[in-house]
Length: 292
Image (tube, rainbow, N blue to C red; front, top):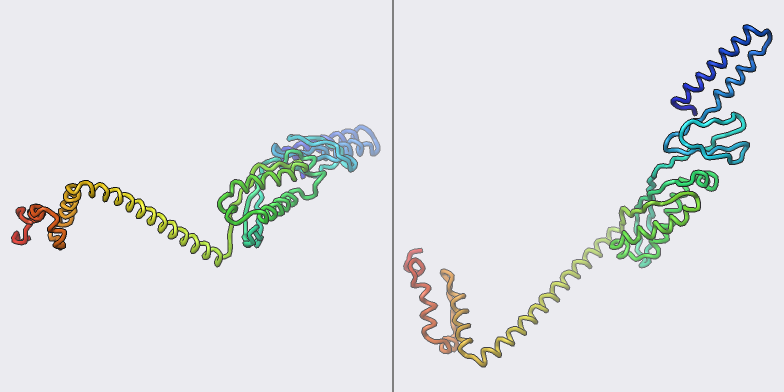
């Protein structure tokens, strides 16, 4: 198909051929005007335009002739043929694997996207039929193989590693076709709903188990510290009494608090302690007669 400026060039060539044919017909009798007209038609059909992002593949009598660079190229109509214009820009291809079993026999649906580019237009056209579809099928097949060798946990937690593995395998296949893969990204990993609920319950149970273990370890640490404190109190009864006084005060210092102290504990504490604790009620505005 002729495009843009190529149409103008062809039209000018054809117009010039018609003008020359008319002049020849006017000055020379006979049908000699058909020669320049035919030549003009051939020349007008010769130019081919290739866009900046494309490369053209030219065949001559069925054999590869050359790769056309961007711009206008001239061919011989009837002898040369432009079999394809290859887009050299980066392309993206979506592919997926549905209901594929992982290594631990979990059915998953995986969606991924492939970014690739043609670096050798000659190989892509002459060695592969419909290379766009071939790249897509190669990516899908590789994805299924990788899923079958991976466990579900690894697929969910190590996506970047799987992306690199897919990139390496797919690029090794496509490099022979003049195509290089720039990146592969797994977009989504879906598992059956019932399995997802079971995994959620298992994760919750694991968190509860971890919380209980942490609580037990905390209690063990507290017990160890209490054991050390008891050794100090055995050797120093005064420290024990001071600790008891502090505990009593902390318990009844809030307004309206009431604490019942066993007689044995009261006897072990200096009588002045009870007075000190009760002094909290003797402060202005803190006793029961304050009306507060």
